[in-house]
Length: 83
Image (cartoon, rainbow, N blue to C red; front, side, top):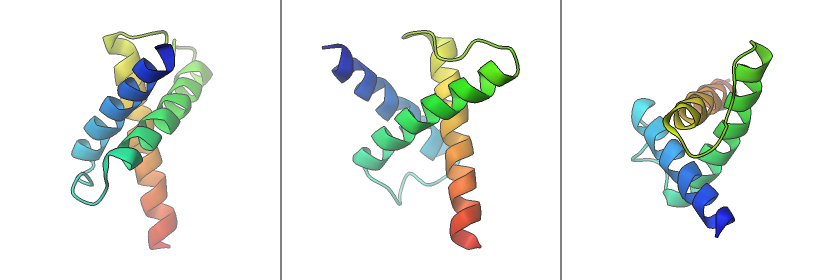
């Protein structure tokens, strides 16, 4: 059951990031899930590298870290794609 909750958490974080970056009309739920999971890892790495706590569980601060990471992933993806 734990992996299912992490997938739902990743999908929610990816969906919020896609709304922020205005890419929600271009991608589907599968892309949101992948984006949220990768964003969680990137956000956790970025926050840990500056001395803050990253993803610590199912709470608001972890969701915020995951969304910030997913926004960074979308932004870098745009830079690479538009290059």
